[in-house]
Image 1 (cartoon, protein in one colour):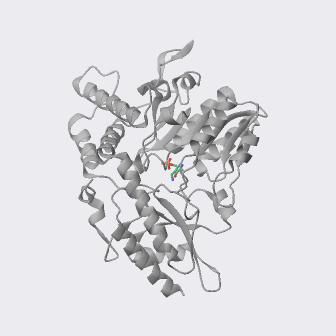
Image 2 (cartoon, protein in one colour; image 1 turned 90 degrees about the vertical axis):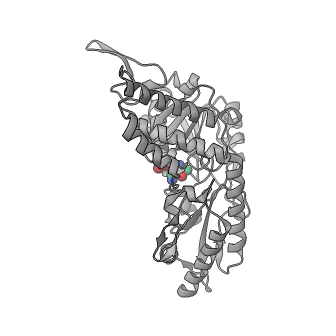
Image 3 (cartoon, protein in one colour; image 1 turned 30 degrees about the horizontal axis):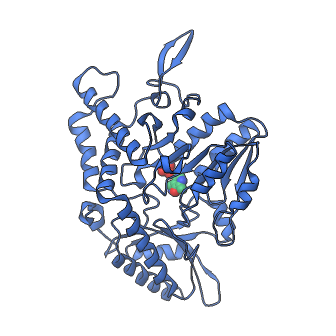
Length: 405
Ligand code: PMP
């Protein structure tokens, strides 16, 4: 990987060299991904499937090749297990709707954790309301890790699905999802892993994890916006009813009734984002060339280094300090009297010095409520970030604090 592959990073913001530490929200794109989108529209754009003409066949092949690349990247056994979605959020809504339709009844229970993103909470709340089912929440221990003993006690014949984040988008904590899955499977319960924050930072392998469903978003993985995937084991996907109706998801449509297409098309109604899938495939190959283990090691190093440097500043609290993290950490700052400095003030003063971080509840309000703060300052790394940028961030934070104090 060359930092110069990412043209956006060379710019200045407010007269300072940009330091982009908001990768958990979205990552920047290498030139090969930007070029792939231009290439698609300038050389082979045509609607896919069903086309007899040359361009349509080229476009179809590119879309299906991308599915194969992504299936291999996440270790799916079969590319039919990879359904293209608009992103993690749509994948979770799709699962909540279809799984809910088929398998959830009044009184059934679905388990999520206390550190979920809203997109792994609200679709389940909506389903529970629809079906009069119950949403149960794995609590956190004092060190902010999942309370696995409490989780084990929650599993019962009423439990129909468990859905947890692989990596927290607020804390960066890597959850022990292997154990979460093992315990659920011991009760015959399927598990969905929200991989929005793991797939960009860690090698993920569906066979090693043995999860039943997995969701992620291309835009956090150096790919384009508006596309993601829902992985499902074939034996589960085959049992789920369709999600949206329309073109492509059907076999035959008659006034007397409609029959549905085979997997994966049954879940891909309408014209798919074939330019997005192609560009995502290019991004995935770029990540593979850089090496997923090297990306993970590099980001782990940046996280540890940032934590060390932050620990030297008075009044800074890093959440889940000392725990292994996947490229994300959250902090808050307290003044000499122990009063919280509002994260918004920190975010604004960092931005003025060219450092992009995210502040707020990060779409995980229940977790932020549990931390009893209005929000956090979140720093999140990508493969192109480096230690010298952490130094710039630390100096900028110190300057911000001296202004606020
Ligand atoms: N889950 C987690 C853990 C996330 O970090 C995010 C994105 N912040 C999402 C789900 C939702 O992803 P998207 O907005 O790409 O659908």
